[in-house]
Every structure is written in C-alpha cells, then in structure tokens.
Image 1 (spheres, protein in one colour):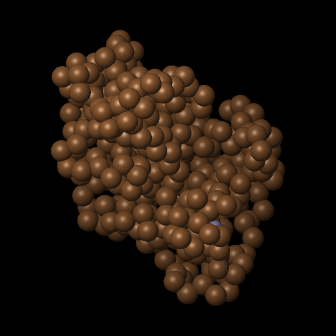
Image 2 (cartoon, rainbow, N blue to C red):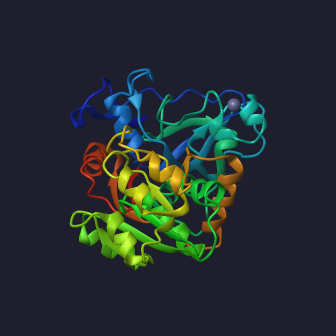
Length: 344
Ligand SMILES: [Zn+2]
C-alpha cells in the first residue's frame, strides 16, 4: 500500500512517501478501511518528533483522522459491512476497564489513537475496531469528512459535556486557526454563545468573524485579558478555551469571569505554564482537562453534519504524496481549519 510514514523520529525531512506492506487482514471485531481522505493534527507532529514514553513500531504510518470505504471485516463484525462509507473515531478504547464500563471511553486505561501508538490513516489501508466506524455524513465530501472527527469530538466534549455551555454565555477561544479552535467556534455559534477569539494574524481574525465570531482580538498587539476585561466591563467571559498552553495560560485565567470555566485539551506552546492560584480560588474558577470523547459524544457530534447545519472548514488539500509539505504547513501554523490529504 502507499503510505506517508517515517523510519526514525525527527524533523520534517524524516517524512517519507512510498510503499509499505498492506495493513494486516482485520482480526475479530476489526475492520480494514480503504482510505479516501485523511486529515492532519498536531499529534502527527508530536509523534513524528517522538513522544517520551510512547514507543512506536517503525516504520510508523501517521494519521488519526480518516474516512473511506470498508474493504473487509473481521470475524464477528455485524454492525458494518464491506462497501460502507465510514468516518473513523480515532480514539481506541478497550471496552472492558472500569472507565469503559462506565461509558467514559476516553478515560480508558489503554486509551490510544490511530496514528499514535498504532498505524494510522496516512495510507491506502488502515485497520481499526469496528465500533470506531460511523456512517459518513451524506452531505459532506470525502475531504470534509476527514476534517472533523478528532477536532469536533474534542471541542464537543469540552463545550457540551465539560463546560455545559448555555445560550447567551460568552466564550473566549485563545488562538483561532487550529482545528479544535475552529470547531469550537462553529459549535459555539450553533449553541448561541457570544464568541471572542484571539490571533496574531489579522487574516485569521477576519476568517473567524466570517464564521460568526463576535469579536477578534489581535494578541500580538495587546494583552488579550486586558482587552477582554475592557470589552466586558471588567466582568470577563464565562468560558475560556485555551489549547495554546504556556504562552497564554496566565492571560486565559485573567480573562475568566467569577465562577468561570477554563478548558484545556492541549498545549501547543508547552505544557508547563505559570499559573495564578490566587485568581483560581478567589474567583472560584474550574479547570477542565479534556481528551477526545466517548462514543456517545461522537454520535451526538455527528448529528451536526447529518442535519447540514455546519461544514468543517478545510484549509487546504494535498495529495498523500505531499504529506511532508502538508505537515510543514501545520508546523508553521499557516492553516485556518483542517489540512487534508487526498488518498485515492
Ligand atoms: Zn477501557
């Protein structure tokens, strides 16, 4: 099969495109999917560089997001069949641990992602659990279908399950442009929130406003927490979503209203920011960590697309053979929305 992969960890020059042995025939409860389109995530960069404590067999095929046609199914699989058009939930859980049995699949003790510990979607063929296959939304192209699973699931769990946002509340999204941030903006507007976004790029702020963002703040020119205080009459916002991390976390804390909620699902500038315990206890803030989501959340999020209410934002489409160049675009933070690889 054709695939984008690396033989050793390192920089962008480690990404290769070429032939690898086909993914193995699917075992019990598993399916093999002929991929039509895949999408990039920051995780692909972390995996390529090497994540301490997470060894991967080499050569390693990257890619968590993928959509395509089921090519074959393993013993015992009945919920899907060869020929079905599917999107894949990238999060793989065991189904047996105490967290899985309580329905908290992304807390599974062996939770892992396609393309992280196991071979991913940047290939003609990928093997995944049958329970991770969901019907491809009919109104979306292959490229659009690849562009939503990881980011919309992550944003959905944070806003709907964790922060339990309500119409009329205010949300600050720090660093608009990345996949999760753009998905959160789209979901928040559907749910009737007032949305503030920050970026150092005027173009990205304009694109966010075109998607419904109420206010764009250039965080290259100003302390965005001071600007949020000014814009809200010193009140602050109800919810802050910060997946930037080290560079912005303190300002995010200072942007939250009393009783506010802070959401973190990643830290692209580093996981060890300075914090502000004084503001956290005095303003009675709640910090929610969140990773991916449950199967119920994936199914709930999927309905957004069945109803045609929203389409994932596709930043650019590259052929699989140009995966290295696509990853470079992601690494240089030039994207707005999802960078997609066309595989067939
Ligand atoms: Zn489990």
